[in-house]
Image: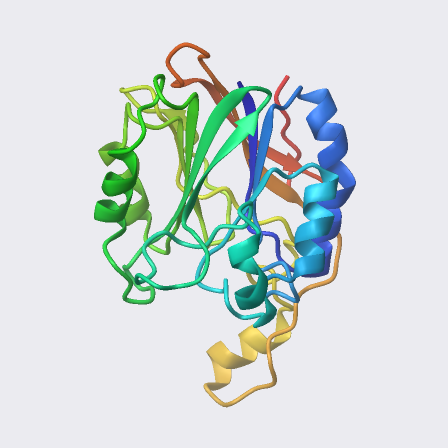
Length: 269
């Protein structure tokens, strides 16, 4: 299978670069499945129904979330009825929505798991245990053809630990949340593809997607400031391309993708 994971969409510019390029990427890379992290898609904080619909229409199969999943209150009203929109698996029991989903990709089954880290993040349930409990119900290369894990976490160490813990049992572990693409795309010894952070889809002439002035003032003056505003310049689509073995579900190839905006472009051949 050939799949694409797009990092955190940040605001209008992030949405527009994905909406602009995703249909062509699906054709050019012959993609079977696309996952997009959308937790910053609405003005940098949360997601709306309309944004979900626009992304699905453009070619996204699943939208994952993170610590901003509930910043747009309307998400609470529709997430239960939209199985393609996920939130972190390790939220407490009773939280609206779901943290994983099993999806059809041309007759093949793709399991997508969304989890959130705990180091320097909200004190949620243990993501390692939550994922282990989920994987006890599914077997890569058996009951499912591919498994993608979006680990929304701050600490590089926590992301890397999860990648190694799941090596050989999932197709891809990819980090989100820090908005900077890391240069460590690799296939781990057991066959799982890994990248510490996919980066954001947004304007990189910014402070992690936000207009520069307010963050600079917060760091230099330590005084109350106006609200953060999303940077509106040309955006870069950052993501991870994955190709898996149809027999085992393990990775054959993983490469970062960067398209448009300020960063040097990189596309799979």
